[in-house]
Length: 113
View 1 (cartoon, helix red, strand yellow):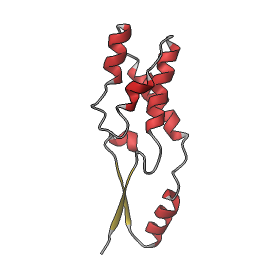
View 2: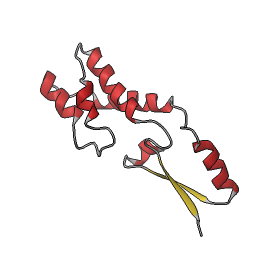
View 3: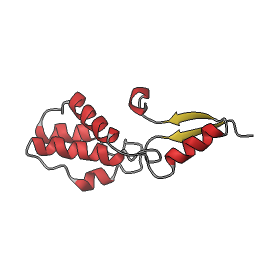
């Protein structure tokens, strides 16, 4: 018997990869630099260990980015994203059936909520 539904945030409930990429692109453009799309393509669907944007950026310009500003920009972009198709109705159906709901994420708890 099914007692709960656990849904992954990233890519299933909300599109998050574009927001992460767009935040790095914006940061780079703000400093007159280009952020290479090819470098980001290594990260897609991965663990995030394939390419470290912070290391890339630091090596390129000699100083690390403002991590707090980058995180806030990404969170703002993600917050503007709608739920992906089928998510809302699945949540409604799970509640109607009396199932517990959970959220899974490889990110920090505060980020996923």
